[in-house]
Amino acid sequence: MKITAFAGGVGGAKLAHGLAQHLSPEELTIIVNTGDDFEHLGLTICPDLDTVCYTLAGLANPETGWGRVNETWNTISNIEKLGGPNWFRLGDQDFATHLERTRRLKEGKKLSEITREFCNAWGIQHAILPMSDSAVRTIVDTDEGELPFQEYFVHRHCEPRVKGFRFDGVNSAEPVIGALEAIESSDAVIFCPSNPWVSIDPILSIPQMRQVLENKKIVAVSPIIGGKTVKGPAAKMYSELGIEPSAFAVAEHYRNVLTGFVLDTTDANLEMNVQNLTIKTLLTDTLMNNLTDRARLANDVLNFVRSN
Image (cartoon, rainbow, N blue to C red; front, side, top):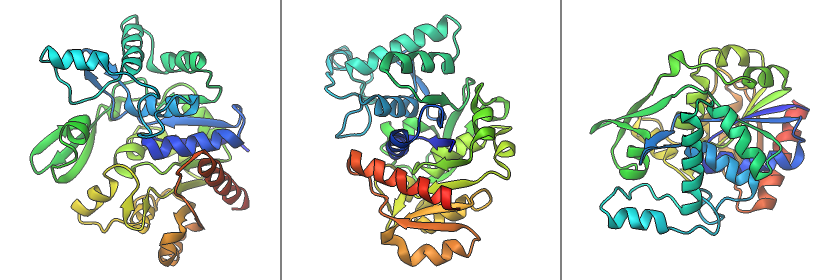
């Protein structure tokens, strides 16, 4: 069975890693959100892309889910001493990733090409693709005006109230080579438990992406459990947009494309509501606290895909 997974953030990276435990490199392609990429300290930073890569390589910080394990902080500490910006905490190993990525981009290489080279260096065999080689930037409309995503998310700690989102550059962006082909040849597409607004929607907003998804079996895993997100501001965003945060709200968000939806047993009372959207459901434990949980949830999702 061939699967294409859409992912972003820590939850998305965890399930992508779980899927990689069950599927061979020929059977799994992971397309990652790059809407939260930004330029900082003269470097091109790709937070979601790096989180997915570090996780599959076994290099991610197990405590935070992002950044590198056994990290040191000498560079950012000295930048801070010199009066430079320190709000986006980059570790020394992480700095090396951004420095080398930026150098290769300036040489004229594409982000997808660089990502493939990095994956080879880190021993990742499964294909990890940025959603586009073109720059797409998520802008958050808030009660304090428009903010670039990382300014809202990291610098402002998600404090401003959200009013909406837009993705600068998305209309002229094209999927990277191999992305559409992977989707077309897949038996199903899985939306990992990532933020629908700022992790999955940027991918879906790329021209050609929605078209290739038509008539595809698509299963989403809810990032909201019991009205709350394990990590990130998705529940807060739903609430501030006037939508009660819940697994059902996530299913409604995707209702025009989904064929299946996975929700946590905590939300069993919402299962019938989701089914009334003519979406098939799987009720299971979706919390991923460790490596075993990732593999177990991935297996549950894959069995659900096979049986539907």
